[in-house]
Picture (cartoon, rainbow, N blue to C red):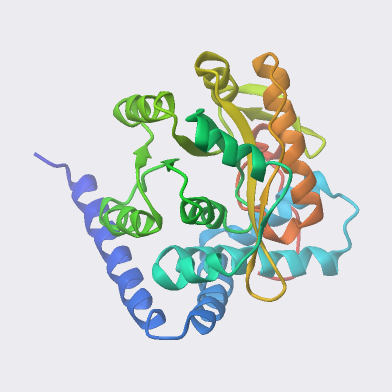
Length: 303
């Protein structure tokens, strides 16, 4: 029998999901660019203050860029949630999102490599981070005819997770939920010559302390370990935002094969270059350096 706290949690999750569905329905009535603008505004000015995003952004920026001028910090405090909102509504925009991706260029030294891997049936691990909209590059590669699956983390809100997974599926399948079954299915797909998208820039308490943005960050070695085990290519990919409202879709050269630590550090370094070049597109709300930022509380006159 469910406890009182469990029932209360379910009711809370249901109410949050209902509000989200209502906002989503309104936004989807707008044109693609207008809905992106409005969802960016909504997350920046309504969600971010209550979700603690602003404090986390300031905390992480204080750690990585201690000399950043306050005006730039406050610009980032607004720009980062705006990117979150835009990415969220893009995920739910289905054909409109895919059409915008189709109009965006795919470039980089790894494009020819992926073409050959696809022709040869070579397993590929497509590694990215929470920068721009990482689902844009998945959509682009599927449009090129590649077999691309993605490993995703299910939402804790079960009501929200239902339509979230449905939205991800509109971009393409298969999808592999984190967990034993999802990982088993993913490995089978990879070994069969598929390409699997993985996001690597989250704190992993059972990972290895490696350098990212000049600080030690706990990073999973699983991508490099799988690459070595299944002879898969490891290719960094990014879906960055362009000034024209389209995307800059980048496929980097494969990471050189080596031991798992060296390969994972190379992936961190590759992502770091993109974050430093496009800092307002990265997810500074993550507790990426959890052990280093504990107890930090940067002051600001703004909420």
